[in-house]
Amino acid sequence: MYTINIAIIEDNAEDLKRLNDCLDRYMQNCKYSFTIHHFSSGESFLASGLSFHLVFMDIELPGISGLETSERLRKTSEDEVLVLVTNMIQYAIHGYAVKAADYIVKPVMYEQLSLKMPDYLSIIKRKQKSVLIRQNNSLSKIYIHQIRFIEVFRHDVYIQLENEKLKCRGTLKEFEDELDGCGFVKCSQSCLVNLGFVQGFVGDQVMVDGHQLPMSRREKKSFSDAFIRFEKEW
Image: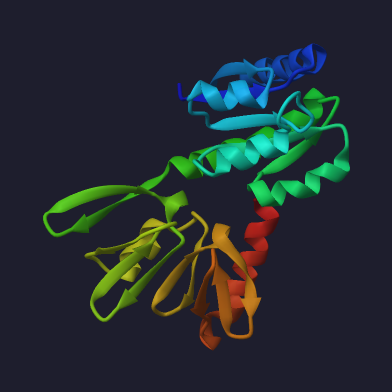
C-alpha cells in the first residue's frame, strides 16, 4: 500500500481534530495509507525539514501567516500539493501566488473533503511519475512535474526545467507517447508543453513559466482545447 505523507498546519485544536478525523475516515475507504504530522505554526513546519506529499495550510496562524509560510515553502520546493484552509474565503485568491492546488473553507466537513481528495491524490500520483533520459552513456530520472517543455532542434532534444535545460537523445514522438495523458501537448511540431506551466497566450505565442514559445496555426485549436480541459480537470 502506497503511503501518503500529510502535514496539517493548524493552531486551533478543534479545527485540527476535525480535519484529522476526516482524513482518518477517508483513509479507511481508499487504497492509500496516510501518515499525518501536525504543526501548530508555520515556523515549526518549516523547521521540521520533513517532506510531504500533501499539505493542509491554515491561513491564519500565530507568528508568520499561512500565506507567508507557503511562500517560504515554495522558494525551496514545488513538490507538495498545497491546500489552503480558511474561514475567510476572500483569502483563497492568494493561493495562485503560492501555487496552491485548492482551498477548503472551515469548518471542514467530511463530505466536502471526500469530494476533493481524489483530485489531490491524482496530482500526487502525477507528480511521482518520471521519465528516463539518455545523455551520452548515462541514464537520468526526471520527474515530469519538473519539466516545463520539451523541444527538438535539428536532431537534438532539449528538456527545459525550472533553472536548466538538458540535452538528451531521442525523439519528440517518443516523449509525446510516454507522456500521453500526463498534461503534455504540442504547441508546434517541434515543441511539447507541460500544460501545468502555461500562463496564457499572446497572439501566436504561448507563455510557459516565463518562456515565450511559438504556436503553430496547425496546433493552435487542439492546444487551446486541451489547455481549457486541463484547467477544468486540475
